[in-house]
Length: 112
Image (tube, rainbow, N blue to C red; front, side, top):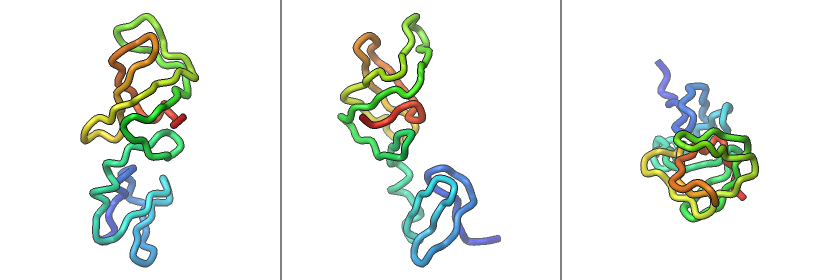
């Protein structure tokens, strides 16, 4: 069996070594061979791959139904002052102008 680890960001095993780095051609993630990607695995990224931090502003890229509400989130809705969900790089918390207490998947958001 090969000693090449799976990508810590997307989880796919189609990685290859390049000098002192491992590279995932599927998502473009690069990490050092020694760290195993532990620090990089918790980076929260938007749909375009831009890193997100607490307090950032994001925009919804498609209409989303919201559980427990009859009001959908429309494409282009701005979510200000986001909060990162601890140990979950695929979700953020935030509030829109009309709906409070949202938990959104980062695959439907882009950094504003």
